[in-house]
Amino acid sequence: MPKHYRPAGKKKEGNAARYMNRSQAVKYLQVSLSVFRRLCIFKGVFPRDPKKKVKGNHQTYYHVKDILFLKHEPLLDKFREMHAYQKKVKKAMSKKNKDLAERLLSRKPTYTLDMLVRERYPKFIDALRDLDDCLTMVHLFAALPAIERENIQAERIHNCRGLSLEWQAYISRTHKLRKAFITVKGIYYQAEVEGQKVTWLTPHALQQVMPQDVDYKIMLTFLEFYETLLGFVNLRLYHSIKLKYPPILDPRLKALAADLYALTRYADAKDRTIGAKNEESELRLAQLQDQLPANEPGALMHLVENVADDNEEDEETRACKTLFQNKTFFLGREVPRESLLFVITAFGGVVSWEGDGAPFEESNQDINYQIVDRPTQSHRFISRDYVQPQWVFDSINARIILPTGEYMVGKVLPPHLSPFVDNEAEGYVPEYAETIKRLQSAARKEILPMPGGEQDDLENAQNLLAEGIIDRTKAKEAAERKQKMALHEKQYHQELKKEMQGMQYTSDPNIDEIKNDGEENTDDMSSQQLVKDDENMTMVSMSRKKRRLYEAMKISQGRKKANVETLETRKKNIQKRKKTSSN
Image 1 (tube, helix red, strand yellow):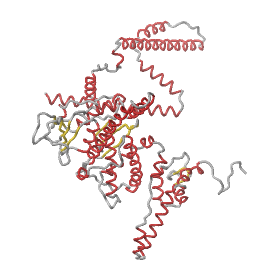
Image 2 (cartoon, one colour):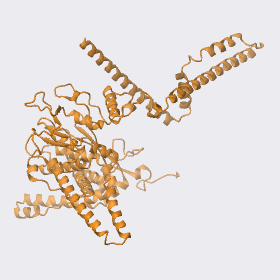
Image 3 (tube, helix red, strand yellow):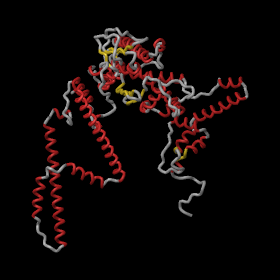
Image 4 (spheres, helix red, strand yellow):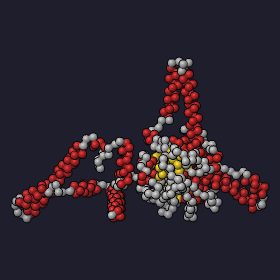
């Protein structure tokens, strides 16, 4: 009998024992495929990709431990109970027993996902790291219409809208927004909450088209978990700034669809109440200091200092908070009100709009900027600037108030640069990005370094010259050494050839000439050849895996370089067209 012989039906080993396909998992759990999908989404169990696929490459595999993890989930029993309940209701309806059917419908079993959120995210920081998809999904469904055909209910859409506005109100109130970028898909936002960068996408405020090739059941299952998760996150964040959750909104503003403004007013009112209570407590502490022993007032003041330290803001938050400070904006009816209201208030500005529920009218003389998107206006005020909405987003990304000359109504706007792209790392810096950089330096009263230099080189200008001389000397010495090695190698081969022919070797006079010519042409040898030789020697000593990785890196660098060259040619063509049109 062979050493590794295993009879049929006995214990399995290797990947056959560690993984099972989806059909085996569904059969093992004794549930339907739809219930299995919901359970996997709620528990965060996803398919695996084993190296050796026992059942074939066309199968979906799960780890056995994940399936055993699902087997002991209490939610599985609740799904089975709901399936049995639906069968009872269906049976009562088929027998036309209305009393029994109504009694069963009034006792429908329910479940919550609270324990799953606590289980998947034991720490609050874990929930913040996994919040990108959650916010994007919730903001998407907040903008969708209610469709009974796809089981998208109006109640769920209202819930998503409430959760998204509560999140935006917290970000706006604490000034945690860092970036905003308008694209064809929608508006990308990035906030920094407790040291974690959270990025999400919100759709434009337009009529949404519902495609037919999307599985809305899967999306609704994800949404069900994300609603619970975002509710927990909002609860924790609101309690961290000492606000009651869920917030109680002004019903008049809510009826006028000014929910975000109502939430902002709610937060400001709570802050004023907390400030009054803090003043009263400080007064009581000052009165108690005369009555307490010498050591106890210090302890009480230490507690007050600890509370103050918790509310301290970092430098970037202070910069965002004061960007639009003491600036008043008025929004026209044609601009996206909700996104601009969120962005401007997050950076310290005061906003009003045209319509019901506005804090002040258009005729207010304190307005500094009016955001419009129409070439003609019924009435213009001289005391304010009329700019297009892109000016707001470009200003917050640059962290300075940009000049409004290029953003005036009716003008062709400058390029809207993405704050998520590192231009220096990509190898191409747009012309408008350089303009913004100069404006930033002028606002901070800094001196821009030379192209390719660092800020430290401005303090000692001779560093650049010294480094250039050293690099050139090293390259020259390396080229000389390589030339000498080539000459010695040639001389050695000639000696071997003479010895094989039985002739006595005499030094070739041409070698001296070659040496002299080589010394003259040393400077002409390019350092690129040296770098290429080093790369070839390095690749010879690499393993196959590292060599393929290195080749992939070189390919990506080549693509990036080609992309930069394409952008440069486009830039030159645009400049030529401008010159020809001006002439």
